[in-house]
Image (cartoon, rainbow, N blue to C red; front, side, top):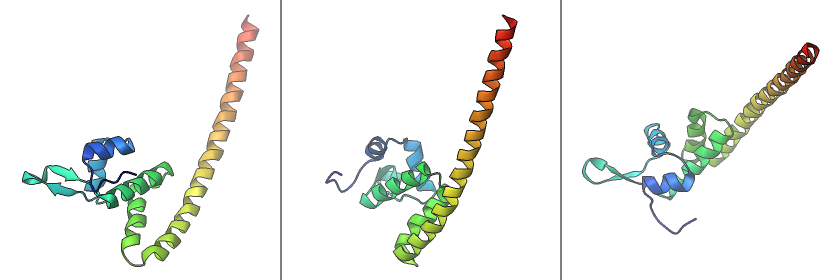
Length: 130
């Protein structure tokens, strides 16, 4: 982590390997709140809080959480019921997410088995024709 106090949208995008559009979208949803500087607030300056929130947003996305849930979880830290409530809520969401991923993994295994079977049938049919 750098010792900077603020970052531009370009620096944030580069540091986190996201697009400017993604950052603006997260801002629109209220997940990030950069300081707006200049005439009409055209220049965005992101603070440490935004960097922390963006890291949490991206981790949540990698784990498959919807942005609405990510926002709820992140916001709980600053509001009631605070960190304890945030952790309890997150634990319940982890269980739901794990169950969903396990269902998806089973579906993928089933699809792969079906593809293996189809591939073998195709190869058998080709061998019979030659």
